[in-house]
Length: 291
Image (cartoon, rainbow, N blue to C red):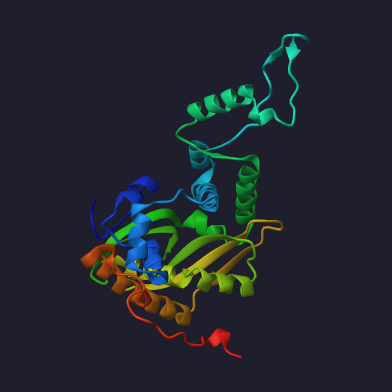
């Protein structure tokens, strides 16, 4: 695929580009070691349900109802069809209905018919639509209407082949705003600030910005980074937060540390673990643990 470009590709195509480093890779390496990163590659886990739900919300909010319906479907309740030989009537639904052969056969047939789609339960399906409604009715929906959503940048960042998938890009004459959609339990300033650092959103923000700036057409523009935080429960508050220069500087420092480990992984694979695996390391009192 062409380098130094901005394009629209599917998630499958994006994840298949294994030669390029991205923010998720750097997060894993920043938090742990090349040894742990390699173990994750060798033993991939099934996606956590929260990630599946997050992807579904992104699909509906950023790419619209048609795209959502094409890729997601809600699991129906199903109704009994088996006839009771004694009464010659359909057997009533009982508490053990989901363990019956009738239910399992209907479910298997449904999954076979929808094998290309991700199946959501009714609660997840309703949540997707509640979040979407909140975003549409918020003052920030203009970004989705006017911006380019779910676009990929392939470039060379800090000398490394890199990739980044942007939720929203708002491109103006002299300025670009990168907006990242985040679902959260609590979108208050205090809670979301904790999320930024608990989940290394600052690292991702810095990497997205650097990846975009590496493209010649964006190198002279001012780049701003914002998070569109949406609560996953009523009242589904929608808040917009901007990454300050201090936050981005911290993110770039995290990127630098992660890239050292990434280059180490490229050179020797998963041989390098935690420092304390080979020599004793002193435990010091962190700032948050002081008496």
